[in-house]
Length: 570
Image (cartoon, rainbow, N blue to C red; front, side, top):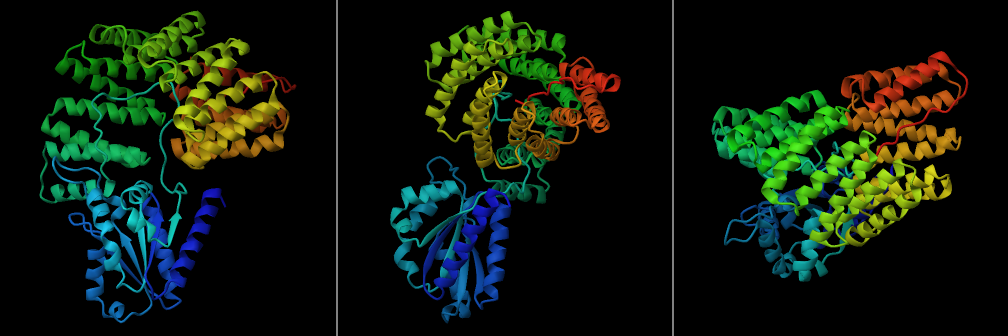
């Protein structure tokens, strides 16, 4: 059982005991959980267990227009003679977790209304002689503790439940490229609220720009909630409707957003035509020197770079940079970002001098804009350190990694995923220097943060497991490396798909372990499997594809033990 499951089980048993021991007298119990599915399963579970004890379970839902806790419960009690008689019961309050923080001009949001009602709810609640479980999100729990302190002080328990990753998780945490679109909407509406809006319009056959907008908001909400497959399906619906309505610029944005998700999944052949179509629309409607065109060029260039198509990526990066210079001037964060991305390209090509020059220019711009302690400075220092590491300049790389780590800890706290990324990178340089005990501690610290913050099945956890396995492998600790490689492979296949390039890396590294265990046929089969993925996703000329080919050729020609180097996942 994973740690999250253990913690949830303890919290569940505590909640169950609190309900049972407060039977037939009022007890306010706050249950904190950010996942709809987990909330529902836990509620169903304690309702079943309480039924066997003769305790009847009821549910009420907070009204969105008048979100009063007292009114919701009082309406239920007035309709139920069983509750009026004071019989054993528990009431579960739903709906608070999905109250919107969004308000029209001059009005209070549903969340603020809910908190306002709580402040005078206390005395009215005394008439209810049974435990009441109120499901809220962590955000709403924090708001209650700050803005409804009188009510909060009256609680008899708070029970925290964490996601056990029953839903797909998304995206790549780190760093260097942000494939953001300047037209991104910041509205943060709950998914169930958006589903209601959409269902109402679809039921009336209303297909207009408003419905298309709600589709895009829902797709973004699914992305925020790490439900990538759902997000893809909704982007496709948005695109279909935008095509039908001929709203071109919104269509270009949706195409770009869908392309980014396919890009992340390693489905490059699906991503490319969407990027190209988005670019063409923007060039036609906005002109070839618009900033949105620069964004499209940058994203397409990044797609080509990860596939090893460097000659195709470079002119796109350069054109994107030129547009940004013309529109924004020399001292702008987007200029720094363009320099950074072009530097990554040159680093991939082994053009270290050119890459260093651009990384330094990017850092210089960001320091002028933000000062020395901004998170963008941490990213720049990290990327420059990676370049020095590739060149074997460990004494130059280490202080940059340490400074990047220091900034991230100061700005984000010690348990943030970006801190985990810094620990991972610093561990890598210690590994290369043979400082294995230091590297192991950092890898383990990095892994613990990622598992805690992102869940045990996140792709970054898979990357961390892979790198820790490489450390053990390099020390000949094969029995410790093997389960980590296998777990990394399983996560990557599940979260990114069996044909993602990172799956090929996992297969490649597992093959090396098999080779060093003298299990040559298994090693060869794994390399062949990895090569098939890389040839389709990355092409024949990509460095990872070439490395796999070389290692496969070596095994086929010679079974004598000789080092074959693994591939880091970053």
